[in-house]
Image (cartoon, rainbow, N blue to C red; front, side):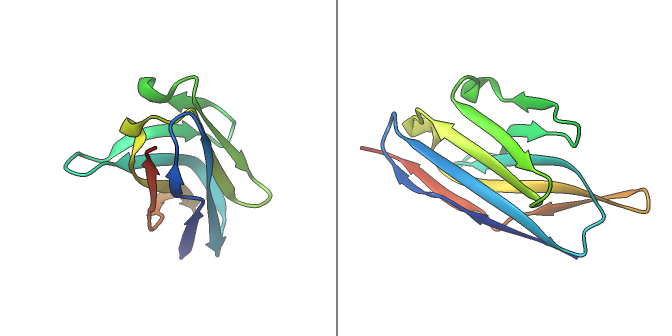
Length: 119
């Protein structure tokens, strides 16, 4: 079983910065793609950014140039650096990790961390 613990959410002013972290623990074999999703009130969960084990990165258009996803494989941790956040970035942010065990892919979710962008 894999556990994901998120941290770093909170209140941030527009134009400020915030860094989210998500650490995986447990009986780990091979972590595949790591990702961040978000869900705003009344909206569907949205994919924000992904990073593969090989370092390929993708972003949703709305955060390109402002957010940066990265990972530390030695620490089994994925980060989301949020620069110049906007009020519309307000949401609960979830990390998602793909864990490969004997050729089978399992997906795990973090508990979510609230990010509120407001002055």
